[in-house]
Image 1 (cartoon, rainbow, N blue to C red):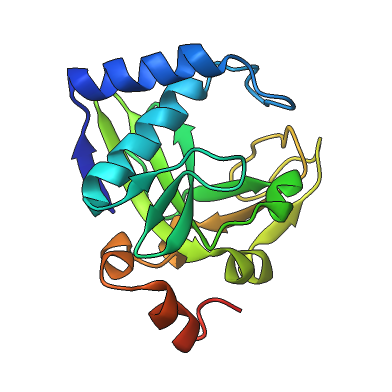
Image 2 (spheres, one colour; image 1 turned 180 degrees about the vertical axis):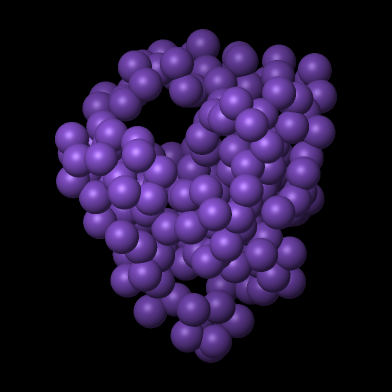
Length: 173
């Protein structure tokens, strides 16, 4: 887990983007999560240094030719490895190479790790909308795929890879 301190400039940039975006179609939080989502993206871009902001439906950043979609959750505590990442099931069609998972708590973004998209769906647990997740007792608001943060790859590893290296190591299937 990597901690990135969020600066006033990061908040200003994220707030501007969130205001411009408004509420996305099928948004679970009805647009209230936009600020946190953009803070997660900005923190990951800051950590990866050379990442290029794209903000398409399919991915948020490009880093060493790797298309990255950042998935962010807000939290009221410092996250732990046994907490879970989530990807809503309708996002399975996104044309991204990897997911990077973050948590926002106070003025800190915690980069929890990453997982290549195809590998994520093979390893993650599928949860149906309305069911209670037996691992954390959260009632699922949309069909989704969950995986423990401790099972993700460390973000430091992504910093060292290119898309070709990911393909060669069979991390992308």
